Length: 107
Image 1 (cartoon, rainbow, N blue to C red):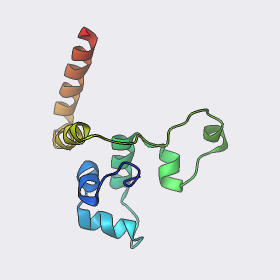
Image 2: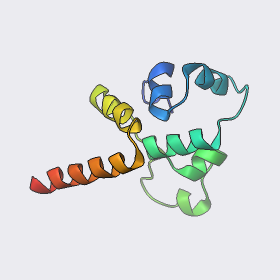
Image 3: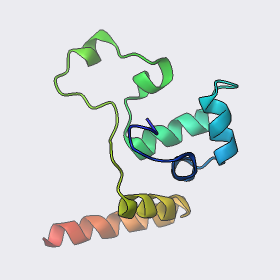
Image 4: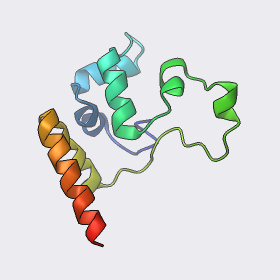
């Protein structure tokens, strides 16, 4: 997923909230990611959770047309927004999301 999004280990690890060293160990199959890391990848990349955990999809999911396993090509602006957003408290995240929805509703 990291390579598909053309992210280096530092960029990807910042997005999902782990160290670059931890990501490197995971990519080398030295150990599995924690559930928190899996959830973070799911949230940031809108990944199909079943695929992320098991590496496969159910028959029902396979039958859905045009299913996206994850978003691709996060640009620099999106990367910065995600980095900053992940630093916020849960209540601040909710406030920012409401503000964004309000802004979108204007246009």
